[in-house]
Length: 176
Image (cartoon, rainbow, N blue to C red; front, side):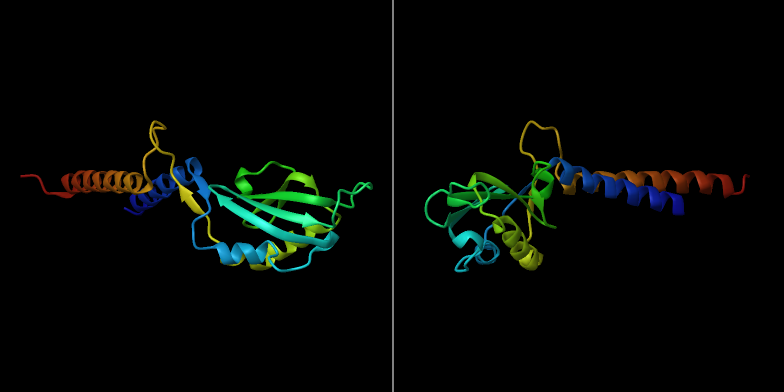
């Protein structure tokens, strides 16, 4: 009986995991203030950069910064407009700077030295309150919602349990 319970739990766990792996993360509404704090709203950042705007769209956050006036003549000094993109770590390219909940990439511009590091530090200090929302793929992908998979796993476990019970009771019942 213990084996049956273990098999049922493993099957159920696998059913739950299938959807999360096939789904994709999105930024749910209601976290705008937290994101603005993480991205440096109202804070002076390295390279005389200031957060000037952001957009959360599906799986990505685009943060725009205006840094130290005109574009620099020396590489690594930064300047002009910089756009950083924040993604879920599972969706980001290998070269991205990672935190527990985010991966940071440069979408455009040349960030001044220290900007990405300073933002990564800010993000790490506040990201514990952020929650990604996982969305299952829609239509045509052949995947089933997590609830349906869990129900199938539990019904399968119940059928196996009933079969085990009937076989066991048949073996132990006295013959007449």
